[in-house]
Image (cartoon, rainbow, N blue to C red):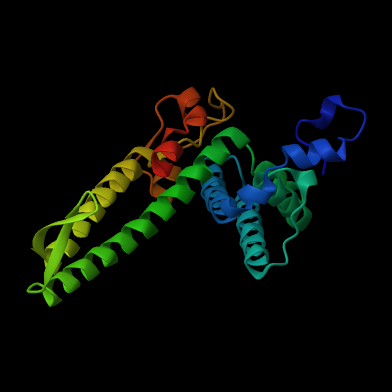
Length: 240
C-alpha cells in the first residue's frame, strides 16, 4: 500500500526517516478504539446512504476479524505503514477489497486519531476511577478496624501530636476523593466527539455526527472543527 502522502515522490522513503516518523510503536495501543470508532463510522455512513448495506456488512465483518488478529498476536505491524489507522485500513482492503477503501469517506486521520485518543483516555479514566473507589473502600475498612489505635502524627519529620490510626487512613480517603473528582471533571471535558471535523474544516458528505456520538457514548459533538482536531488539552490534564 502506498503512503497516503507519497504521491509527489518518485523514490521510496529512506528507512531511517521511515523509522523516525512512524508512530505505530506507540499508537498500536489505540487499535481497539480505532476499530470501535471505524465501526460506528461505517454504520453511520450506511444509515446516510454513503455505503450500501452489503458494504457496511463487509466492513464490519472485516474489522471484527482484524480485532481478533490483533488480540491473538498474529497481526503484523510495520513502520512502513506509519500508524494504527493506516495499518487497519491496509489490512481491511486486503481482506474485503474495494469496500474497505470507502470506510475513510468523510473522515481524515486528523479527526480519527482525535476520536481514538478520547475513547482511549475515557476508558483509562473509568478504570482508574473504579480502582480509586476500591482504594477508598479499603481506607474506610482499615479506619474502622483500627479506629481506637493511637498513632504518632508527624510534622517536619518529627513526632508532633497523637492521632488515631483510623484518622490517618481517612486522610488518604480525602486525597483519593479529590483525585476522583479531578478525573471525573477531565472525563466530562474530553467526552466530546471530534469525528466529522475531517482534516480541519468538516466534510461535504451527508453525515450524522449525532448518531456516532450516541453509539460511542459521547455527550455531544465538537462545535468547532478546527478545535476538534487540534485539541490535546485533555491529554495534558489527564497526565497532570
